[in-house]
Image (cartoon, rainbow over all chains, first blue to last red; front, side, top):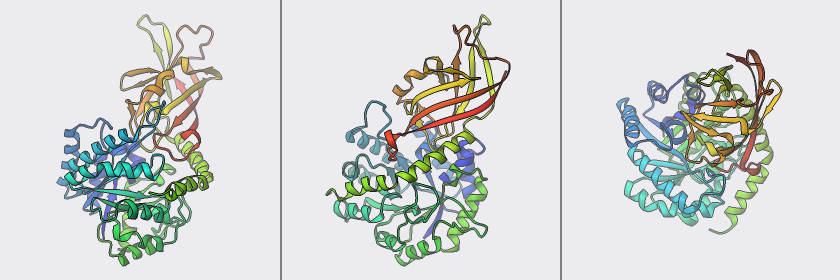
Length: 266
Length: 168
C-alpha cells in the first residue's frame, strides 16, 4: 500500500488564492509522497477548456518532482444545462474526453463521478467507454462514496464488469464515517470494505477533522487500513481532506497531519 | 442490471435527505465566509462622468468549478433598496452577462474559487440611487443549481449572503 496526496486536500488555500496548484504539488512532494491525485474542476487550468499544452505542463512539473499522477478524478456533470439533463450519449462523449486527458497525464486510473438517473446510466456510459480505456490502458475507477453502500457497487461490478481489467472500484472512507460531514456519513461496517478490496484499484482516505493526536475521530482509520492490508491491497491510498469546506485551516499543516495518520497504520 | 441498484440509489437519497439539509446549511455558512474577497464596492461611471452603478467582487464558493448556468436566480438589496436580475450584470473575465440570461450560459465556467464582478446597474434609475459614499449593507440572494445531482430538492440550494461594503 502506497500513500499519496490528493490535491483536493489543499482546497481551502487554493480556492482563496493563498496557494496555487503548483504550490500544492510542491508541498505534496516535500512530504515524500510519490504520487498526487488531481481533480479536473479544481486543478486543471481553464477547465473545461484546458489545453493539451497546459495538461502536459502540469504533468511535467509533477514528474520533475519525482512523482506521478496516481488518479485523475473527474466529474461528468449532467445538469450543466438549465433546460434539460445531458443525454447518456453526451455523457459518453464527455467521459471519452476525460479518459484522453487522463492518458495525457500518464495516470493509470480515472475516476469519473457520475450516477445519472441510476446505475443503468452509469453502466451504459462505462460500457461505451471501455474501448477507449483499453486503447489508453486505463482503469475506470467507480467511486464508492457515501451515501451509497459498498455492496451496491459490488453488485453492479459483478453484474456488469466482472473480469474486466479496465473497470475497478475506488472506495472512499466516507462510507465508513460514523459522524462528521452531514450527508457524507455511511455508517457502514468496516468488514464491508474487505468484500471490495479484490477489485479495488485506488483508495480515497477521506477526512474532515483531526484531534490532538492526529486521529480522524469520525473515521476508523486503523481498522480500515487493517482491512486493506488483510485484503492484500497494494496500490495507492490518497489523503483526501475535505474539512476545508467548513473550517479554514492551513492546508499544508492539515495535509501533513493527514499523511502521518495514514503512514501510522500502513 | 436489475432494479435493485436503482432502488438502492433512490432509497439512499431519501434516507439521507436530513443530512443533505444540514449539508446545505454548512455550505451556506462556508459561502458567507469566503464569498466576498473584499468589502469594497466601486462606483462605476460612464465616459461622460455619469454615475451608472456599483460593482463588487464575488467568489465562486462551491467546492469546484461550475458553469454560469448554475446561477439560476439572483437579486440584491443595497442599503435596503431591492434590485432584481433586470438590474444586475455578471462580469467574468471581461464577459458581461445580464443576470437574467445567466441560466443559459452553460459553456462559460466559473472556476474553482474564481472571482467575478457583479455590477448593479443604476443607470436611468433616478430616485433609486442608494448612497454612493460611505458604507452600504449588501444582501445578495442566489439560487444555485448543482451540475450533478446530490439529491437536493430541485437540484439547487439558496445562498443569502450579507456584507457591509465600503463604497469608493
